[in-house]
Length: 131
Image (cartoon, rainbow, N blue to C red):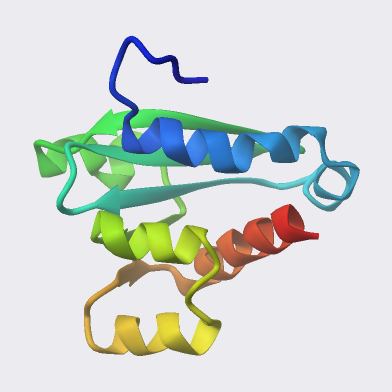
């Protein structure tokens, strides 16, 4: 998705990780009837990533996070939100944090979550990637 002529955005990195699920038969079958959106917002970055799963197809959109208005649930229609630092997102993406590690960081407010059910769906996407 990204090329060497421009810097990679957070959304590009997320897309590189999760868009291969579009070629995963288990993903397509499991989410063939689902539609949901999860917003990943690195509070120390310039862009957020909106992951959309729509009937077995996953896409990632880059959203400028310079204004809270840009990330508003009513504007974007997201079902779940995860907000933390780029460093913590990277650790989660590499599978370095267990579910209990993430839960502890949510409790200590190092990770902000809205709608924890979506967090479960997000972790299931990661699990499918590692299978």
